[in-house]
Length: 285
Length: 305
Image (cartoon, rainbow over all chains, first blue to last red):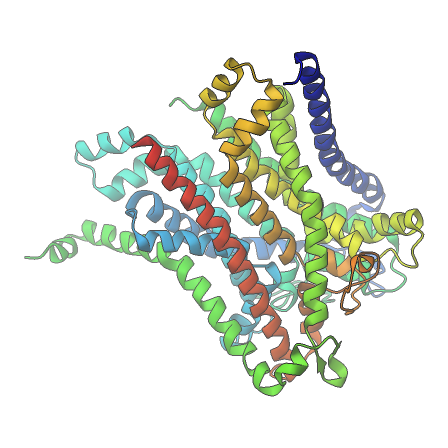
């Protein structure tokens, strides 16, 4: 048996090692964000944010890509939010614990795990070619929606389940129907959690490149899309294009684009997590 | 009068009926979507097997311009990078999960958890971009390689991408271990260190396994990062030495080539076939991960009843 002294030394060593590993994990994350912030900021000016690309994208702005990513995020929310919340309500309030429900859960876990580029293939096969939407905001949004669903479903379900059962029992016992109970009692109580899940899901959609490669993204389109059936530029794909496909691309513009994408995505992340933590602090049950 | 007709009679009940119907449809939609994805991959991918003979598909030469469609180098590329990423993500992900859940003071935990969640949300194209511009030149100089765009560079970045997945799932699992387990162990005279590795982590074993599986799934499916930093040379890796030379993964091949093929060509169908392989791998990984979750739940139910 080891002496207590040795056991203490072992513990100290172990703890320091784990602390070090955690720092190794966390410091590069902060590093990435700060690095892009420093190198990207000089590129940011009014023309860069609101202008169209010029000279083969080597000058001018990235406005069409910003607008495109905004439209795609919006389009994704139109499909993914009602379906995701509906599915979560089903799982939390209606489904009984049987084989069918288990199958739904396995399907959700699998949806979450399917590689994003496979979603791109699926979107190409179903929306672009089979349903003949062409490479369009519609096809891209639908593809991104299905990819986003599992995030929204699982976070919403968690939020719904956190609402105490007693709330439902009381509501039903004073004569409310099941839907009235869900609509007036459960959903409002779970709203912050649902919002967090929705925003985190849309954050993922906004930052993804692979699913939009063959379903929506335009290499260079110096105008804004007119309808959901138009193709569009998008920030993540634009960053990929200008950093790999365009020779002689000024490095400043690349970092500037990365910064705008990062700010777009991180601000969604920060909004989502702050909604969650504020709701937790205010929760009365 | 049946209950169904009762529902329809008043307009109020009709609305409730329709909403409930929508909720049920949405509930089953996940199954429909997984099924549809698989069917579409099969429809577009299986013709490849008819048009290219099987021995050519399972060969080690990928050169689509001259109709060489050997997918082994691509599978090999995916495996070597995923293996490397797993070797990084598992110790670091689980190490930091243990640190955050068992050792860190409350305020450190509150500070670091959101930070790691941010890494999970960083767009992979941004990481690929930095990998190309910063990490790969650095590694090229450090290791004195002809190019910095290697499997190793990809593995490091993928490891970083998989860490948040591994960490957050493992941390949840450790967090779910009842306080009393730790108290009992400490009361018996074990140190905190011994308690962590002999009581808490084994008690959270299935959750930790799930974390590892999901991390592997995340790494194997990642596309943009590997496409940008691994050099994209379809060479079959034959040993550990290939870690430091360019490779090409299945995901990167689809992403790089699908934009340039004619719809319905042999090349097009082969790319969908690679999609089927990826789909099946992620299916296997995730079903393994989820059966671990279900087993654990059942065990808990047994203990509680």
